[in-house]
Image 1 (cartoon, rainbow, N blue to C red):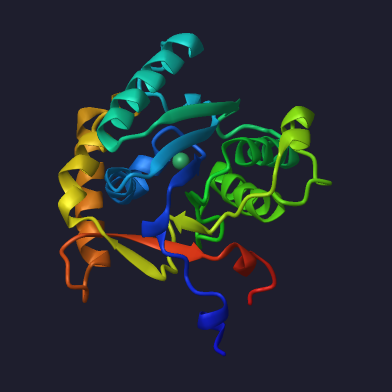
Image 2 (cartoon, protein in one colour):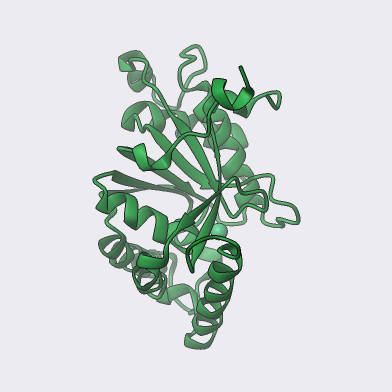
Length: 248
Ligand SMILES: [Zn+2]
């Protein structure tokens, strides 16, 4: 028996209910809108959960927090329509601010137990040179919440959800924004969809900075597909949930 036989890389094409946990409003779509839109086309239900309020990166700083939030949600819903997202949820922790890691983990446990996804997508918290703490905290809290979902002695933020929870299987976790991918997703046929969704995020980008971002995504999608049989890719680290502890 090899490790690959015992713990095969889960096949994201099998996903039926995918919970995509992101630090900021646009992270899921910037990183994996191509992959997610193809999975949605394949029949998977997509749920987006945004951890922070994302208010620090807003272009027009004269807006009130309420006005800015309205724009952020407008953009996110427009992108969701393109990608095929079923539901959006928000936790509202302060963007780039001070908040408790364990409070986030409790909220993530709640959503995982409530929505019962078979796959979870999130940022790779072990990305080398990642300087944004929201990304590190979100990725790590997600990994822990995926590992601990079945351990009901570890409380979520909602005792009612915990007492109603029946064990379910999470087949895998997929980390995006990773430098150590073990799976390159072919997004050649979904490239236009991805860019259309990315361009919805107007509240956070000037037209020039959006064009720069799209150029970067364009180059990256081709770079990661080098040596593959397709033109454009999105890199993922896909792990069995049992591979999230002690490195086996
Ligand atoms: Zn982000």
